[in-house]
Image 1: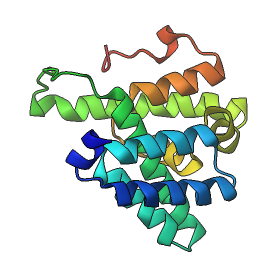
Image 2: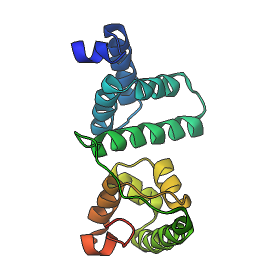
Image 3: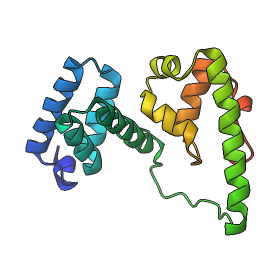
Length: 168
């Protein structure tokens, strides 16, 4: 608990997080998601703030979007290495080419998802909130490996099928 307090999350904040977790469970959210959110909120004040936003929001669409943001924070925390990793440099003039490859990859994956049963079914099977999946498929941002692996496992795709030249 001392590490939590040192990072800006107080014991009082943790009690508030537990209260929000109880409310999330009462509203039918997945226990694994809630546990991961609580753990991430204890490590990262931004996730704590997202949980407060979810609690205080009454619009179902905004709540769903906030849950998607919490899931993104959880995924980001899982992907974070224990040490600084130097990433390769991508020249500015190659960004558009990479963006086109990302869009094409996501379009192909979306076709597979649609043939399999669609976004709603994928959300239920992966535990990834539907708004997160919609944002995943509609953005040009690089997908997180954890998201790709969850989708691949549900669709029974091999790593070869989800490995692309822009993530190798």
